[in-house]
Amino acid sequence: MNVISATCRDEVLSALADGHTSVLAGGQSLLPELGGRSGRRLVDINAVAEFEVLAEADGTLRVGPLVRHRTFESDAVTGPLGGLMRRVVRNIGHPPIRARGTMLGSLAYAHPAAEWPVLTVILDARFELTGPGGGRTVPAEQFFTGPFTTARRPEELLAEARLPVLPDGTGVGYAEDRRGPGIYPEAAAMAAVTVADGLISAAAIGLVNAGPCPVRARTAERALVGSAFSDAAVLAAADAAAQLDANLSDLDGSERRRRQRALQVLTRRALTQARENTGP
Ligand SMILES: Cc1cc2nc3c(=O)[nH]c(=O)nc-3n(C[C@H](O)[C@H](O)[C@H](O)COP(=O)(O)OP(=O)(O)OC[C@H]3O[C@@H](n4cnc5c(N)ncnc54)[C@H](O)[C@@H]3O)c2cc1C
Image (cartoon, rainbow, N blue to C red):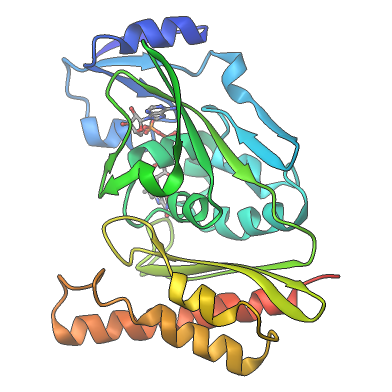
């Protein structure tokens, strides 16, 4: 392997300019994939101090390329957004993976069963991509284009994720099924539900491993907005979330029914958690 150690953003960008060099961030997905094969050009970004940015301003959380998963286990991010990230992150891999792996590495890798891509899509996050021609901003929903594929061009760095902060009064929840510790989930659901004056004013529901790209359960969200956060509303939204035939159309009938049932149960659990921690 030919590894360039960069110490600043410009060195990273000039290494990427040939279109055949890959960023080495935490290495938790890239190195197992390479399996020690030589010949690949990598640019190691781990010494670029400016990439450690994690800052909140004007209702937006900015996350740089060297913010490790583990950071989100602490109270580094406050309020309902921090609460949702803490619930999600403790399910990613196992502690050594969370200590090395980065949030932006997970977004760039775009594994269909990864948690962060879904979280960024349901929150309407925006991504900053920087390349030789300058920078551009891509909404999360347009960034993920298929399993392991994104709108990022080979010569671009995923330079920052910008996540809108969730307002007070938002309850959050996360539930998942997995076959064992330290592996990707079979399926998962996450929810952020805002209540104002006794009624749901906004709802974001995401499903993990429910399609080739992160799935946002918009019908379920619409079923909630304007209702009281009742048992009946939770059940109706969970039913709606499970009706995602288009995304599961590659599965045969019994497998699709099993997956739909799982998504229904997981959405109900995530919403029930959200209802329990909806604060004033
Ligand atoms: C056993 C195991 C279990 C796991 N379980 C889970 C799980 O349950 N959930 C989950 O979400 N993940 C899981 N992961 C993956 C883990 O979250 C990785 O940390 C993550 O996918 C990649 O982050 P990284 O920083 O290690 O990136 P790397 O491995 O360094 O890079 C991954 C890819 O992204 C590119 N890349 C990285 N950063 C950038 C950037 N800033 N700009 C452009 N390209 C970039 C690299 O070039 C490479 O193609 C697991 C991994 C393992 C090995």
